[in-house]
Image (cartoon, rainbow, N blue to C red; front, side, top):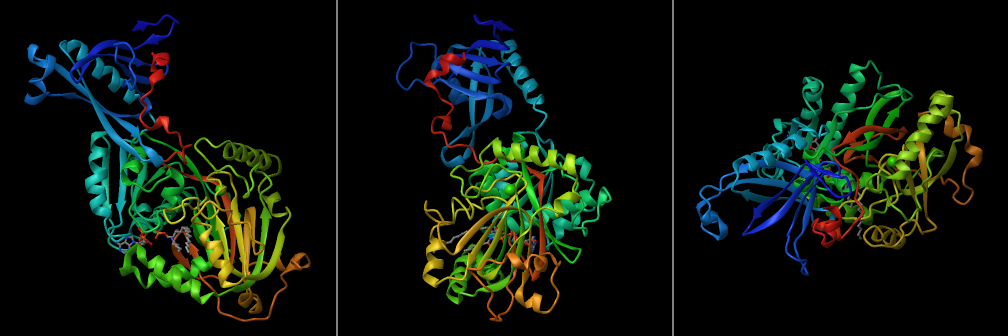
Length: 542
Ligand SMILES: CCCCCCCCCCCCC/C=C/[C@@H](O)[C@H](COP(=O)(O)O)NC(=O)CCCCC
Ligand SMILES: Nc1ncnc2c1ncn2[C@@H]1O[C@H](COP(=O)(O)OP(=O)(O)O)[C@@H](O)[C@H]1O
Ligand SMILES: [Ca+2]
């Protein structure tokens, strides 16, 4: 243990070989940093580096090969000893890569001391998974799931000494059904390789299993659900990969594998969808009626086209320009500080999410769950091209800022976006704004609300007197006068529930704050310097 002038203690500090030169290498327990510094006077572009120990993937003793030994100082040494540190390197656009650095020295004891110290620090990272259950959908996206897992992910898991049980699914719902049977306590996490549909399957399996084991009846829309503490990791290999993109900032299998390895944790809100006291689905990203429901329904017939099916069906649905009539009732989310029109987005360690969770827990402690139903309901009746309820921003490569850029991952609320009947040209303007920086809510025909529960009944369903509850009817006096109902009767749309179709014209939705957790950390603030962890000011850290 080395003592620094400020009283700070270093676990190890040695002069070690790196390439052809000697570097000052330090392991700082207190700050959790491994750093290496060129001891020569600082030059421009000098490569001084540090890696947080929480981002070290593995450490291994290394045999130097003949070529390495024949250059520089090696040749003078009888038997140099070396070790390699594998770590996360952050590149641009939230992309992470695994890099390695090999240090050498003449002293075997010193080399072993370093390996031992680094391994001890890795052992102390208790949030890291040791045993994972992996489900691969071989037919998701471009049908590359198996190859992506085997070539890009499995080698990283094995480097990080993570054991895996891998199931390649043979049919839809294979993963979900399997999760009700396996000895789940054996695992530190579940990984799904596929798209949003596959993620949804795994989530249903895990949440469902948790409620079953705790004796909670999922059919009761008011039941306080039991939080699911087993984290899910998503290796993106689907068509939209919106959940991965919105929680990591990129859909990239290697980046996601590294977030899993270092044991990141991101809580996530989940919405439950019911009809007449019957549980239908859970949703974490988009629950969309009208445009996105119709796109999904049409695209399912074109699965053979791969991800392109959405472009084809998107264009076709846009041309059809169907609108749907119905009644929406919702409870505004008063517990959260945020609003859908905020300029700031949800980022790693989000203050709004933390504060909203705290507020909600406090309210529930004071008044209980039952009180919530009695809170104010707003009712809107009209003709809509799209009704979207989103629990997260829903960013994806097609729309990098998403359907609701300021939505939060874990604030116990969802954003309700209502796109009223408008001209084709206006709807196109609205859609195009998802792909650029302009505000997609700045239109007279678009309204957005932050809600904690929501109900929808289509006009057709109302006419058939099969509405889900009578809350809407009780509040008909509050109908928006600018958009009175018309008597036009057209068919119902379908719900797009995280990429799964749901045929129900009367639903009841409730947001469950932080019901589950992902191996992710939310989108990090983009910082150019953090890209390499290579700082000229590394002096201050040493
Ligand atoms: C003129 C250009 C208009 C472009 C508009 C682009 C708007 C894109 C917003 C996409 C939001 C996506 C929300 C997520 C949905 C997914 O859950 C779902 C299933 O994903 P997966 O299982 O990975 O296939 N994807 C979709 O519903 C695709 C919607 C595409 C709409 C064009
Ligand atoms: N082996 C399989 N055969 C057919 N369908 C499957 C299989 N495994 C999973 N699925 C289903 O495929 C659907 C879509 O999967 P997903 O991975 O989301 O791909 P995509 O993003 O292309 O839609 C999911 O609803 C999932 O239930
Ligand atoms: Ca939310």
